[in-house]
Length: 91
Image (cartoon, rainbow, N blue to C red; front, side):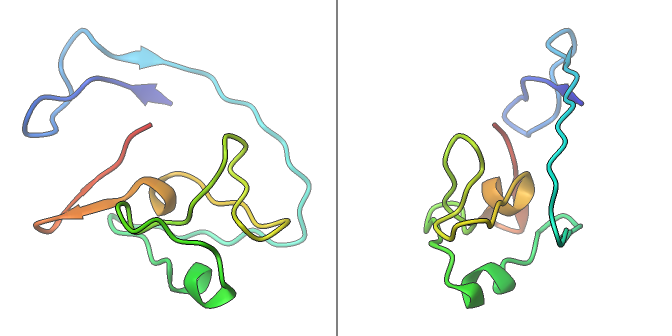
């Protein structure tokens, strides 16, 4: 994965890129992917996961646990912020 600082228009700033290696293995019964620019959080909401009103995504702790034991959320479904049709994601 590559992370970088962005300018006011959310374009990566040259020279700020940093490649990081992530290797995580988690045993699970089911893996559900929400793929796209603006992720769908309807399933999280219907399951009763506590939602963050600012980001529109599930509230998670530093280990990506949601308010429901055994349910984890990550990436855009957690950090997506809807602003005028744009989706901003970050860490």
